[in-house]
Length: 244
Image (cartoon, rainbow, N blue to C red):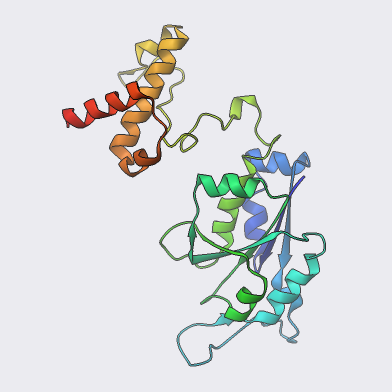
C-alpha cells in the first residue's frame, strides 16, 4: 500500500479533494492510504496558536517550528525513512518525471505551509525535498499537496483500471496527448476525423502520433527537445517547422 502522510492545518481540504473519483476509489479499496495530521493538535498554547510574528519584523505571520516538528514525530515511526516534502514556491518544479520518481516511494510525508511560511529551522530539521507546482503563490500548501498526491497515485499499480491506463497520455513520452473523440460522430457541424472510424489500427496509431507531435509543436515546443522521436517523426517535425 502507498501511504501519504499530510501535515496540515486544514485536513478537510485534503480529505475533501481526495475522497472522490479515481483516487477516492483507490483509498476505499485500500490501494493507497492518505492520513492527515492536524498540526494544530500539537500546539502547546492554550489557545492552540501555531503561528507568531516574524523576528525582524515584516508582514504576516510565520508557522512555529514546535507544532510542526511534533506532528511529524507522531508519524515518524510509521513513515520511517520516508522523504518529507515541503510545498513551497521556492522548491523544484513538479513534473511527470518527479511524479514517477515519487511513485516508487512506499511512504511520503507532505508538509503544507500557511500564512507567510514556516520557521526555517523546522525545514532544516525534517524536510528532504522542497517542491513547487508552479511559479505562483497559494494561500496554503493543501491544494498543491492534493495535486501531487493525485499525480503520484495514478502511477501506483492498482489505482487505474485498464480503461484509465496512464501508459499513453500527455508527458508519458515527452509529447502532449493526441485529440480524443467520442459519440456523436457529428457535433455542432464538427465531424470525428474519418481515420478514427476506419478500423485500421496501424493508420490510427500513426495519425495519433503525428497529432501528438503537432500539438506539442504548437502548444509546448519546449518539450520537443527531450521527446523521443524516430527519424521519420523528426522529418515530420521538420516539415511542420518549414510550413510555419
